[in-house]
Length: 51
Image (cartoon, rainbow, N blue to C red; front, side, top):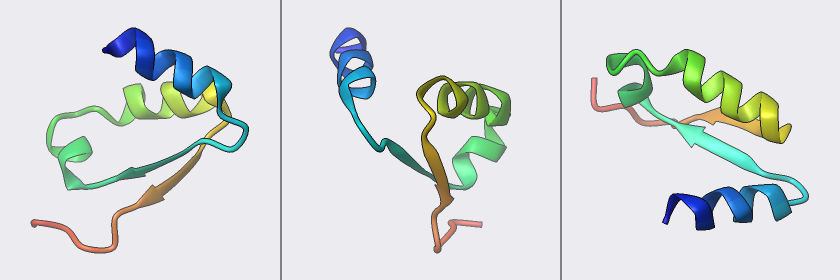
């Protein structure tokens, strides 16, 4: 499954990620940043948070 997701990201012309509060709770900001930079993806913050 991860290989398929990676292939889809590699093929995307304008990828984008929408991230929520879970990224912060799990300390995943660096991983999300690295993934977005690798794919030159836009990153948006979810408008509603469970916080």
